[in-house]
Image (cartoon, rainbow over all chains, first blue to last red; front, side, top):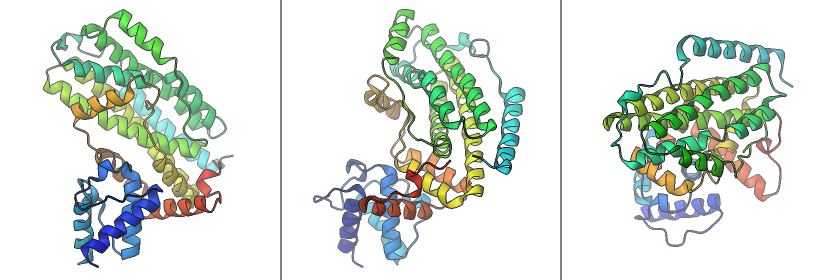
Length: 79
Length: 279
């Protein structure tokens, strides 16, 4: 799956979990500024893991600031 | 109603907790703090942080009333723990009050006004069952423990041995409380794993620290505390959430699937396990 598709997937999943849209989301978007708390964000990641059939170790989810950084981690698990 | 086995397990755990407290952890908030080691030149933000901790701790009457109301029909160990918990938490407020006064950062009149303004608000129990409140207690006490540790380190760095001691003693109690709650949750998991996991997911999704909305200017105060304590948004995950669920033997993925199911059920307007008071 290419990077843009992963970003779209993140955008769709985040909208589902947070029950609102994130139309302006890009690689540089800061997750902390999305107004979604850390635990809800774990839910977004969990949904992506399930859909992509991957498992990201918990420690790799600490320190992620932007959407692009999260997609980097997802891509690594996919490769 | 709890089973005899559940009651018995918790009773033994409470006794262990209480014995440890009596033998290793009893302290006096005036006598056991080296007040001569106060550094009156610490930044004013230190006083704001201490006052905020005090503000949160000051809703003790509400915490005790709310906590006991929720656990009174549960087990003897939980009722006794709640009573003992209140005594230990009281000392945290006493120690912080002493530091604020003795350091000269606050006057007695200011403390009186602060305490009076606090009681204009009331803390409401965030969850309805003993099991959910025990889960909440685990996260909340563990978070408070690690925050106090951060501030102990800071106080040491700025040469205030008295404030560092207040934070260390408070942190030690909070850690003991968190561990007791954590062990009780493990017992709940042994009793009914599926329903307990549903409750953990529910509490985690609805968790907020107890001072939110009731301590005056809480958001501004927390901003200062985050800055001072160098706590970012990952802090809770790294120091509290991941280690706690690991200790319980639960994976993030298990909790996520429960949360997702709950979200879907909510959209379909169906009640789920965690929303139905059971324990």
